[in-house]
Image 1 (cartoon, rainbow, N blue to C red):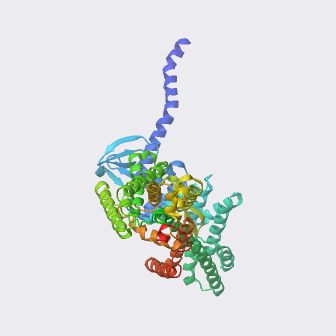
Image 2 (cartoon, rainbow, N blue to C red):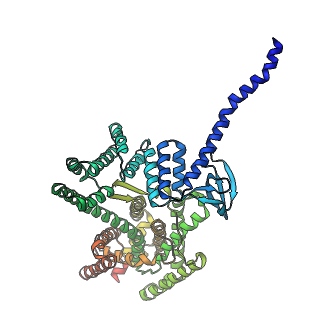
Image 3 (tube, one colour):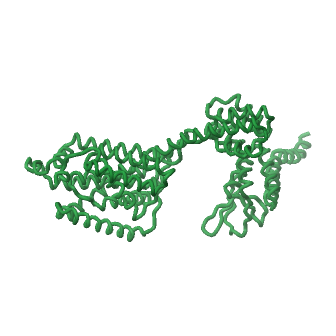
Length: 541
C-alpha cells in the first residue's frame, strides 16, 4: 500500500503543479494574446476601424480599457514593430523609454523608428473623450461628474440617456442635477417629437451651456414648425440677455484687475512724487526688477514653485528698495529743485537698468510659472468664470494699500513723511531729518514697485520693457487722484481700470486709452489738484 502511494506521489505533484501553475500561465498567455490583438486593431489605418476599436474598449468598461484610452488620447500609445506589442513611449533624449501600458513593466529604450505611433485625429479625440466621460459619470468628485456630463452632452445616444436618467434620480449635487436636466432636455430636443421639443426648450432657455446654444443656432435653419422656431428665438434672446449681463460683470472684474495693477504701480510713485516732488522715470524699472527677482527665485529653487511668491514678495521689496535708495543717495539728492534735470537723470537710469537686464538675462522675455493655487478659474456658471490669479492680485493690492496706510498713519516714519509732505521747512526746523526721510521714502516707493513687479509676473511674461508698459498709466493715476494722496490713488486706479475695460468692447483698446487720456486732460483743466487735493511741497512750489 505504501509502495503504491510513493509511486503515485509524482503524479499527484504533477497534477498540483498544473492546477496551481496553469492559471497564471493561462492569464499571461491570455494577456499576451489580447495585447497582440489590441495592437493589431489599433494599428489599422482606417479611421472607421479605429473608431470601432474605441467603441469596443468603451463597452468593456474595465480599468485597463480606460487606461488604454487615456494613453491614446495623450499621444503616448505605440506599437513596437519588432514584437508587435502595444507599449507606452516617452521621449528621453534621442531615445524612447517604453513600458507595458497596463502593468507598467519597463521594456527599456528603443529608437523612434522602432515604434509606430497609434493614429489619432479630432474625430477620434472626441470619441475617446466621450468614452472616458462614462467612467467619470460614476466619480465621487462632483466636478468630474459635471465635466463628464458636459462631454456626454455633445453626442447623447439612447443608451446614454437611460444612464443619465438613472443618475438624475440619485444625484444630490444641485449643479450636477441642473447639468443632467439640461443634457436630457437637449436629447429630447434633438430626437423627440414637436411636443417634446417645446417642453425641452422651456428648460434649455435657462441654460448658458455653449453646446446648448450651438444646437439651438443650428436648429434655426432646419426647423419648419413656426411655434418651435419662435420658442428657439425666445430661448436665444434669453441667453443673449444673460450673456450681456455676465459680460458686463466680467468687464468690471477685468477693470478691477487692471486697476489693482495700476494701484500697485502708482502707489509708490504717489508717495515719492508727493513727498519729494520727483518725477521718477525709472519707477517702471523698479517693477521690472521685482519681476526678475521672481524669475531668479523660481530658477534657483525649481522645487519651490508653490512657495516661490511668498519668498519673492519680501525679496523683491528689498532689492527694488535698495536700488531706489542708492539712486536717491547718488543722483537725485543733488538735483532737488531742478525737476527737468531730475526727469532726464531718472530716464537715463531707466535705460541703464534695462540694458543691464538685457546683458544679464538676454533681451528675450522670460516665463514665470504660476503656483497651482493661482491657476485655473472660479466657474460661477457656463457663461461666467473669474481667474484665480486676478482675484488674488486684487486682494493682494488692497492688502498692500492698507499696509501702507497703516504705516503712514500709525508709525513714526509715517508721521515724519506726512510732516515733510505738508511743510518741509517747518518739519526740518522741528528736527525731522528730511534728507533721511527722502531716502527712505524713495526706497519705500521703489520697494512697492518691486512688489508690483511680482504681481505682474503672474499676468504677463517678464521682459526688459515690462515697466515701460505701465509708467505712463501710473503717472495718469497719480495726477488724476491727487498728488501724494493714497485714497485718491486708489479711486483713480480702480476708476480708470474699470472705464478702460468697459470702453474696450465697443471702442477698442487703443481708442479707449485715448478717450481716457482726453478725459483726464479736460478734468485737470478744471481741477488741477486732482480728485483729492493734498498740500505738499510740490503743490506749494
